[in-house]
Length: 162
Image (tube, rainbow, N blue to C red; front, side):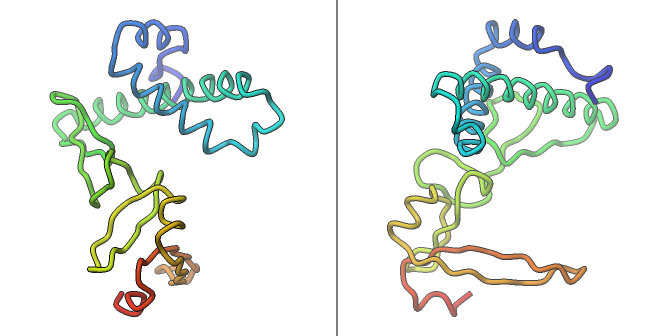
């Protein structure tokens, strides 16, 4: 993917300085990398962690944009959807799958909390732990592999409702 499809990090750095939307995406990816790789980067100072997270975020952003270029070149007329919010006029349309508390989030960055009335909502993990009871359900996929689902319920009685 890197060969012929992706921008170099230096090209991307220049675009980040020019384009607010690209800068916003990079900032979000950097925050996610800091949080997601907290244990792996624990030996570093806070400023070194942020620098390393930003370096990794540039690579992820470069590959993400390259993948978008590949898809666009092979399927130029396709309607592209995203679980992330998209600005008006973007190449993709953002689809919000489940109601969120406050800012739009995705299942990759949050957990499902079932409210007393049974409605699901995506919230931060620490919020769900504070107000709900964790329940782990194990299912099997079509190949017989076990898949664990962790869900939070405000009322233990709701557990059997799903």
